[in-house]
Image (cartoon, rainbow, N blue to C red):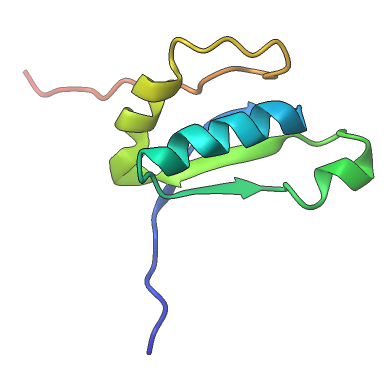
Amino acid sequence: MTAEFIDYEEIMEIRNPGDQAFIESLLASEGITYFCQGAHVAPYLFHALPVRLLVKKDQAALAREILQDLSFSSAYSGLKRPEPQDTPE
């Protein structure tokens, strides 16, 4: 059995464990595949590093839609918007 490669995209940075738990519950309830990078390290570093919320790339738009109207006072930089793509004319 080989491990499946999952291509993730960073959605936001989280600095509060309460916000993290709430966001995780929202994403899990919608069946979105996510990973919170640094979740086990940040509490021991006195939250000097944010937890990076990574979502499966093909579910990133849905995750942004779910999280767009939420306001977290502790979200360091909020939602990360995708870079605009140059479209051929």
